[in-house]
Image: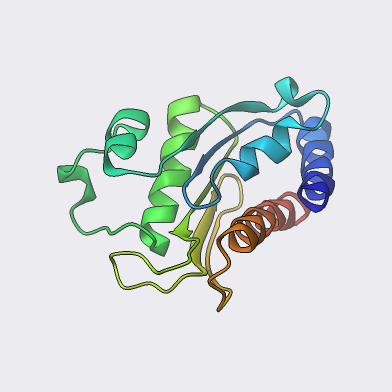
Length: 160
């Protein structure tokens, strides 16, 4: 968690300096992205909210994305990560949306992705989507790597 908070402190400094805000949707990171951002004192200046969108029901209720709205999308994919990030940004009216969706392990998901697969996206003044493959089935380690990678992706966009 210390590594995650270290990255989150850099993100927080950038967001506070710009007077910008963020909302987070995460799945297989299990809340670690939000926890890291919230561990930084002063988080209320930039963190508007987050959701762990781990199930279809969570997607429907927390993200307001219906089954019909998922036509052409599948979880744990770059297009879905982009949709989540954009949805968070829109719903919260914030500058940045950050999302993560994947398969932490120890097995893969029902979509055919191996453990260690994660897609993440940043939506904002600068946007990017990426896929990470850790080639590991260590659930806890993958969750930490997913969160760290998502925070670093956001940090690159903030610094760029």
